[in-house]
Length: 249
Image (tube, rainbow, N blue to C red):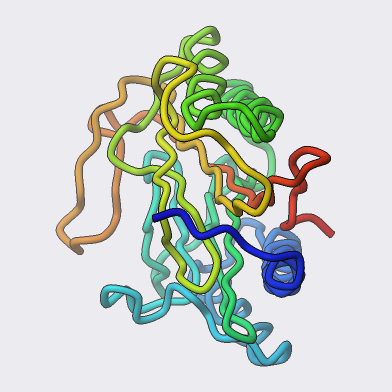
């Protein structure tokens, strides 16, 4: 069941989302060669405490960290480590959510570590563009798969592939609510979008094929061909006036 949110509830989600955006900005500024993913996770925890918020991912289905840190061929759910230092030329996807006053916020961004290859820059740019095109479709009257199709059409036009196993989702009092939002599919399918829906749209795009593997830690998803992957996410409210991105400062 899709839960429509009142304006008051959307404002509460917005407060959570603004903290998520603040923390991700701070994490992005900390990203540089030599920094460990453990340090980034610690920073996100410290800032959540400062804002009186609860890290949403820590303990969720047993995930032990506040921040997901996925490097290069890692797609999502990468686990922070004291031993994992960022290296010049890496790209790192950081996915973060918090709970504040009973409502969740969620966002992700892929960050370049120093000077990265043109291939990495292009993958990140196209993935971020696909998120923007998907958000443009988040208007009342459109169908859910119009969002999905916008992602797939853009990235496949540029020669990339869409991860099928992980999808976007509704968000509110629960971190993951209905509906699920795949990043692929034909347009014009699924439920009609209505004002009051709040959704997290999150394209995960591979440089090579769409196939994935899960590493032995039971969490980290990687590309089977070990080529790069990028991930961007915003929490978006659908309003009568169009989409409103809640996870921007």
